[in-house]
Length: 78
Picture 1 (tube, rainbow, N blue to C red):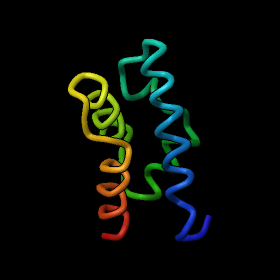
Picture 2 (picture 1 turned 135 degrees about the vertical axis):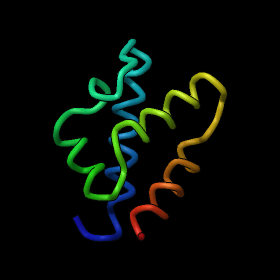
Picture 3 (picture 1 turned 90 degrees about the vertical axis):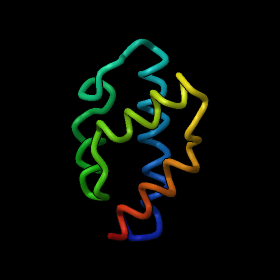
Picture 4 (picture 1 turned 180 degrees about the horizontal axis):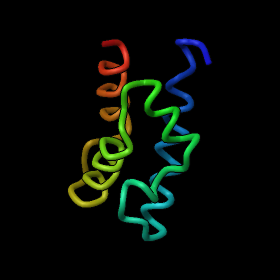
């Protein structure tokens, strides 16, 4: 994966985790599979962090996917 397409994979992982959350999974280890967890680690994101974004969006209406992407992008760059 080159440095320009990580956001496409991030969206896929986010949407997969979101679908599992909607289906009833409420623990970070169950929200993401091993390949997704490995991808998150490669960009400096943890399953807990992405879980928190998804959980907060469902519970409080924010952050949006776009905000989560921006935060992940900052962390990925540093």
